[in-house]
Length: 68
Image 1: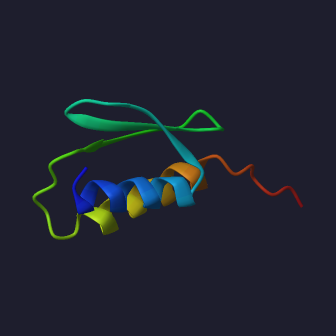
Image 2 (image 1 turned 90 degrees about the vertical axis):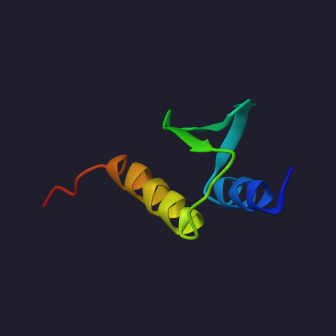
């Protein structure tokens, strides 16, 4: 694995995702059922930030609404 792959793996694991499989993409699954798919060969300098943004959006959607 390259350094960016390791960084993506660490980032996903920090948020509770587990690596399901890897080929040309890394496929992660969260315990709430959310699936995260990232490219193994990221050419974007903001790749980690974009992936983290996607993770935050996925986990935010899972939070229940607050009833008053």
